[in-house]
Image (cartoon, rainbow, N blue to C red):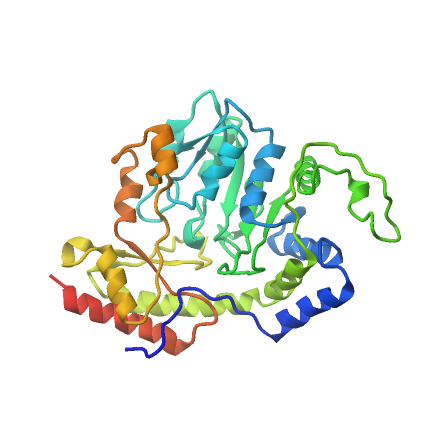
Length: 386
């Protein structure tokens, strides 16, 4: 057993990250400035999108994209129940109503047939979530959206580096929102990015991200700027800062290296856990490049004498940190009480939730850390195998 507790998730912050942040602090640009602009440019080039707008969270990016697309009261937006609440909360923030479509139990992504069944005359958008870093079936989603004149906003909080049929996520839907939260594949502490190929949409998102101020207000404190500005929309305070962008620039530069470590750990887990009938390893379809933001192990509980909560506690005793992604949104009190959801409304999401555990997977882990996770899981299975 390990002597020290293995934390579930830690960002990889190195000397180059620290130096870039210090450079921002010394430059006097600590809010949105040249490094934010540079990070936007580099990220757009990386994913292959025409436009990228840096924001203070993926949640902010999702909200801005929906507002810019004109979503409002009386509209419906279809999304998955198997996601963090932000994916649904932002729909409510526009005045629209979230409509949940159940999941494919294998990939844990939104099920296309379920989307089709939930479309009504009030449906205006779809928010697919690339769960754990595995892409949704985007060709089918886009075809369905075009048939019904629906806006597609990809929630790519887990999907920096993810590819769908050879294309990086960030260029397929009408807009895509990424997360750079502390535990994400690319970490800026807090932060996010919206990408799109639609110039009008990008312009509106950019303006709305900073109070709805006109373009000539963005650099008003520089020598080339002007004190004069106009409020074009009732916007938000959602912009990224140069301190965050400094981290984004250095993290993006070493993303391939960090992904290599994630891939190596995921392959090691798959190698060991695929041989154990008491569990099911994550899928990686032939059309996908998995970002391995999360490693979600599914327990075959009928073959074990303990439940998921007890399995997590056993791992804790083994000095291994874990998490669960996610409690389905309709199970949370606000959504359950407001919309009257009941057990059985989303059977695939509910059944999947009961058997999932997210294991440690991040580039700061050592090979020995990964072996400790493998050994701990195997010991617990051996102890509680029926």
